[in-house]
Image (cartoon, rainbow, N blue to C red):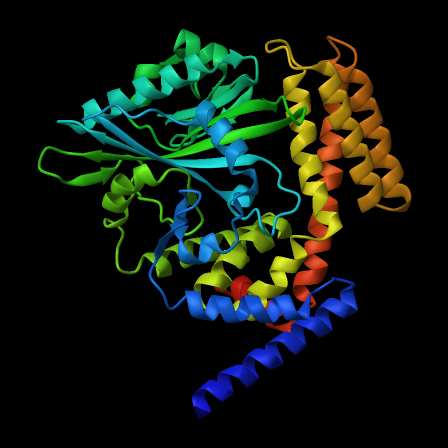
Length: 446
């Protein structure tokens, strides 16, 4: 009884600290909701790892499911038909999930991209055969979804460069992921130069030897809402040998602490794969995220990305008061600029030759971005952002104006991300517990 009372006092003290910092920075925090969420987290964290929502059929880590709302589930499943891979009975099994802001739809009022994550499990006699099958299914998916009434393939990442070199005048590093345009996927080859200046060709078959980081990106349209978005699918590929041994083709089986899986039918393969995770999976995952926090707060500062990773760290390590504070930051109006940065790039890509997306829909979405910028910014920053967005809008109305638009797209993206970066930095360091945490991360050296 005494221990319970002590925990309650600590929770009350934590909420009081959150409220004080929030008031000082003008962040709106619902004290009752914060207390309710803290109590729910404490209760749910003590339960089993994975839960299934019977009504919607989705499942995921117990803590992750607290941040998901099925309000947009039909739309996510519809896009999933474009980005998701089909099973091949007896050879390929898949489990498609939402990740990122899409999986945190309850607290991410202004999501940027539609991020998906898919486990692709291949049963084959050898690793080489598994890599061949993977190359085949990725190429089939890319070619089948290159262009359609509601989508257009943007980029495929498949394979790893076998040597340092240059490609289209830009350096590439051995072991780095190979990016393919839709046209290059079609021809099955990319051209580059070796360090000595000699020409080299990498084929799709060459790339299959070391698949590395596999990811596909599309521009997708929602005809009902008349909106565009970037949809990505990051693959976690595993190979099962005839003796039952399971090997990740990129050397690492991703944990499942951020994903919401879309179909309960995929739970058998999901369960088989997560059993391969070590008993220290949470600790290893937190360590990986903390390295990324160091990267985004010391090496290449992006406090928005750092905040997203810290939220997951705090939820998994029992630092619920700090997580409750971060939840409120994601819902503030300034974070709409994340969406502005993502969508202006999507509009730029959608307007290029290829798919015939509805011009009126693109212009309407550009108008929405302008309104968002006006609401989120003030003074000269607002003036500059709106000026560039108006020029982007004008170029969308004129076919063949991509070159003139590129600089404005870069300016909008840079200004939006700079504003978000400043917003998160000021609010992160304002909470003593988070400032102390960041000091520790900086001192760790990554």
